[in-house]
Length: 591
Ligand code: C2E
Ligand code: MG
Ligand code: MG
Image (cartoon, rainbow, N blue to C red; front, side):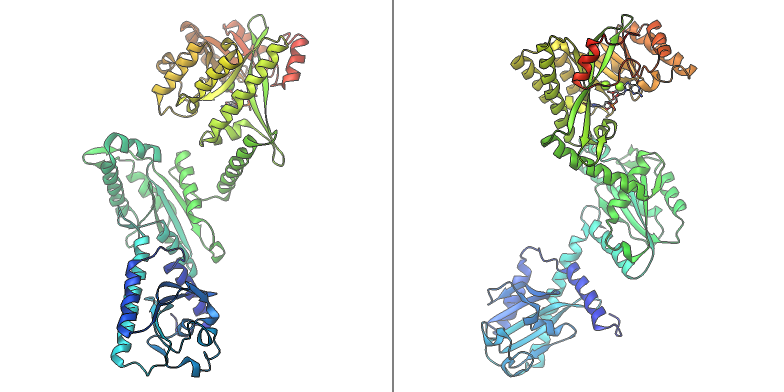
């Protein structure tokens, strides 16, 4: 501590240390209990306490002879010792003008004698003290006893520091952890230094999980150690490496260190797989960089920000990325939508279904529709499924959406059946819906309980998430197929679709992605591609549906090439149920 610092500055820093070293919600600790018991016995004192002095109160880390766990700071004797650097004694509190009127002296526990030694950090801040209290006055302590009390206090302080540093270490790697990382960023800022915070995301959590499954936990552990060793050679010398999450490391550099050369060195090096027990494991690196420049950033959630930059770098395959506020805005919107979605699913009439007709070619009759979800939020307005479905897919909310859609769609099917409207309804599902049996179980239950004709249901499977359990997905699709449902592969021609994979799925239909169909008129390349895709799919006996049919020329081309159905704005936009029945009653699409 700077000798010249004002009492106020000292107290501010002291309180920071208290928060750091002695967070209030710590569990009981036998070592502290033993220290107070030993102190009370040695000094033959009825009361001994390890007192931590916060802004408004003192609380006891351990105590002997006192029931209460805390008192207000005003009453605290220990609060008078916060700048002491050794023994502090009050021989008779009843005679001492500072304490004689205190309710702890006039009333229980009737303090008369008080002696304490500080719990002092290495950088000179007293967190509180170890003290003994007697209900009778005492003569001054001998020098030997005084030294003994100071020794006991030092012992307590060693334990406090030990617990703190244990909380700061990632045991498997021996590196400092996230808490220490954040702590060090805070200290850098408090010292008025500008710095750059780096986060290296070495491998996608799912990939690490796969390594654990295939090669075991201890291999994964060794792999992380090998990654750590490699990273340590890549960051500027003399800098600490931190382990901030299971797959992420961090470090802090000065503002003037050249970001791109630091990042590029790491990215280039990790192009070579990390060798562990002679097995090379490829890495997927994303480095995030966050400038921490001003004290006003003191309370920011640095780790979240720098991690989002690292994630963005990996997702966009750009190696490294500096944190950008827009990134955070996107994340906050995602968070807001996901929290609002939970509400939308559980109450209110925010969600609804619209239905987009598909017409048979070449007759142009409408026998089926696709159900598409709509979300009208009371304050955010209309939110597109193209925005919220991909977000929900990353969470368990997707399952709730799927079940909500299924229930709504079954209700609609019954209503139409009662009105004599015969339409097959397609619903969109993702591979996640088919990872276990619950979804197809629910369909089966609806079919049995409501005498629903399974022929009137179709599943459009999108493949936006790589299949992690292809066997169960196949099994569930086959079950749905056996129940009598139609199965279509959605968004075909984009993503990961390939023929070998397609052949394994029990689907009768492929839906050409609208992005290919919409551009048919303008792009000769898309024309060749779509024509070939249609020929190949037909060769394998699939029905081919073209979506994104926006004009007559496209309709003419896909009809000529042999598509079985067309869907798109030319035919009809997605319609609410009543608008759809009106559209049908008016003769549907007439070409
Ligand atoms: P999708 O399943 O490929 O649905 C077709 C999307 O293309 C719909 O967008 C539809 O409105 C739009 N569309 C149809 N014809 C045309 C056209 O001619 N031109 C253009 N530009 N667009 C056309 P929407 O309703 O915004 O849905 C977007 C995506 O969200 C859907 O793509 C689907 O993947 C997903 N989605 C919608 N509802 C659900 C749902 O209930 N469950 C799941 N899992 N996904 C859904
Ligand atoms: Mg679809
Ligand atoms: Mg589609």
